[in-house]
Image (tube, rainbow, N blue to C red; front, side, top):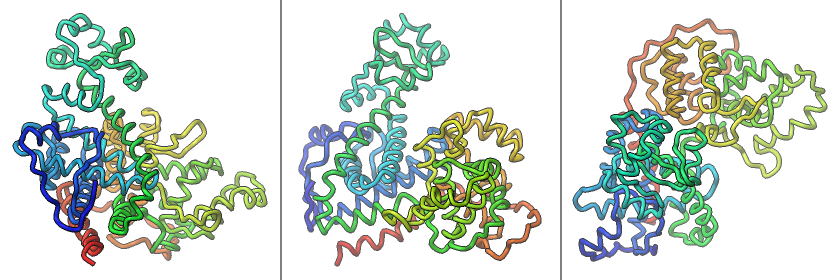
Length: 506
């Protein structure tokens, strides 16, 4: 892809050539674009793609993915931003071209760190899932072939021969069986289904119904995109040397994966004697269980100390408070003070950017907690909705005084792997609100929104260190639905993007 200062010269492609460039409304982005584009178009495509991926993220934690509401809202956003989304629409060349080029532009911005890559891959996977779910059945085989996926739909005769085995293994009912296509897939590509005993195997092949094939396609896409981002990162220095692109790429990569909830503006607002009270009122379940384990065991393993320590740093604990907090608790567990100073103080100072590389670490996001470093036996970190056994999770929610009906709603969301939506539902239940009015993506966001609600819109004050009388649960009207949240998102993005234009106009 080459860049010029002037306007891009439109390619004069005939209809058949245009269709050959982008035969589908979705793709695996296997080949990079080769045409020339202007810097202005480069900027505009990058901004629109970020808006799209942020909309994907926000809708994913406001609605259950795949539901009619989710599909409708996301389709509206894609149409508004003029990207491709549906087959059989007239003159789809330009939306598909925009989709292709903008994806590769954001690869340059989001290949620079593990957190950036993780966020980018997750949103692109959700976008691909949406597009595949609305792909007409007669187009699926061609899409798989064009994506170099060796998945072939079996004939009706083969399907009939294996009817009983496939229905039993995949939980299809007879009504679904008549309408469902079945694909013959190499065993190695269906390992996740095999682990869950959800697929019929024969002679080294898995026979996968259409409803299950999307998981395999997404795994293939994740693997290919992850490898491509690693390769892009290697060549990044050459791109960053271009003074026309570096400001935009840096701005994108530092601004749009969500707030990092560092301690700026919060330091010193929380006192140590408030933590026990705050843990039951305003901590998300992941931090509430870490705090409870620390108080009971007077110790946490490294993963728990990192997750909980950075969370406490984010809500306002200073370095001195953190050292005092952890030392007091570990000493209660019969640890010698000198051993704590030798073995643990350094790590706490390191997390505050006072040792080693002097990196000022930020609290973990929901995505990072859910996708990385799963807990093993004896650990208490991780996401309770993602990593807890359903029965243990149910017991935990009962101890939090969640109603039986509320527990069932949360467990249904967890069963559908909608972990952040489940946590959002928990927030609404403990605060007695119908709609929390935000899309949850970070434990520290949970805390701040809880404090804002409980304090009537005011930030937490350090002076309020006396035990508090129980506050009446606020009667809050339904604040916003996801469409108003998206409108707010678009508004804020447009304000943030205004500065980008200065990079190219000066």
